[in-house]
Image 1 (tube, helix red, strand yellow):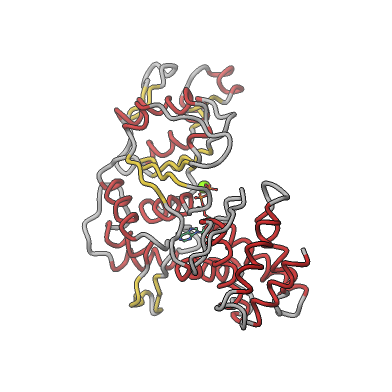
Image 2 (tube, rainbow, N blue to C red):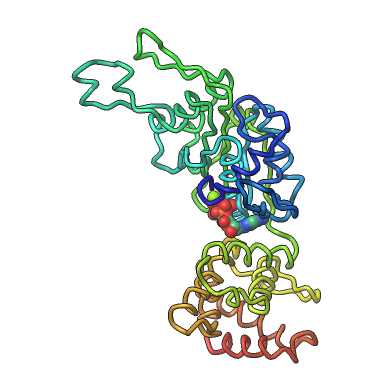
Length: 359
Ligand SMILES: Nc1ncnc2c1ncn2[C@@H]1O[C@H](COP(=O)(O)OP(=O)(O)OP(=O)(O)O)[C@@H](O)[C@H]1O
Ligand SMILES: [Mg+2]
């Protein structure tokens, strides 16, 4: 994120007159602007820099996250898959300390060493437990450099491993009993943790109450409106395919994609109809991927013309991720919508429906 939005971050820091919490590069106000965007461009080094909106759908959530971090409270972003928890944590880290890469990835195989520190065994054998032999973890680096440590998918780690964070979060001290001269490190100002956790995936573990109490929980909800979801698909896919023709980011295709995903995710259509829901999550993140793949295919194989067949195949792959029978759910849904008053005269939708029926 700090590389992708380098110009925006520099321009914001240059114009930032607000008070900054200890160790932060931006004030909370400028950090909010970085994530939610602003219309008026900023003049910086003879250029006009537009601060784009990056996170959509819930401005007050972003404000609450910033306040939590400004008061040095660790933050846990929790929610369904693909709701931009990781994305938001990267944006917050890039804005606060210019580093969104200092990350621990939660997994079943995560060990306490990976959270705290480990040793370079060759040096350990040669010199004993000296500071040069210590291999720092992202948590250790966050504490010593006063930056954010991101903890991705914290509940994928076994509960007892997650709990090794408790003492660090309570006292902001990490003890290193092997180092006789300085058996602990203290967190520098600016250090904090932003963790993410998934509510719906298979393979997630419980979190102890003791650890829960040490985090501020914020739930990230899926995007509610079609317009907002379309904005995300358009802005993210065009960012990911920056060198492709702008005409490829066609609102009529994006609208079909966004409404199909939303209706199947919620089991209701905008006209009030009720539908079966597939097991697949069908998140906004997947909608972005589907559109990106469609655009890349159009660019390389179809002379920059979107192929309806590819578009439908990409949607199909997202829908039947969990089980083959979900294809029936997609087909039934599209058949009903194609006959609705709103879509019966919509040529593109009819073409879409024909292609879905062929799957
Ligand atoms: N509200 C949103 N605002 C902006 N982008 C969004 C939003 N929701 C989803 N996205 C898109 O989803 C992409 C991926 O989201 P991300 O990987 O952060 O989700 P996640 O919640 O961490 O998912 P997972 O639980 O699978 O790890 C983002 O890069 C962005 O393109
Ligand atoms: Mg994630």
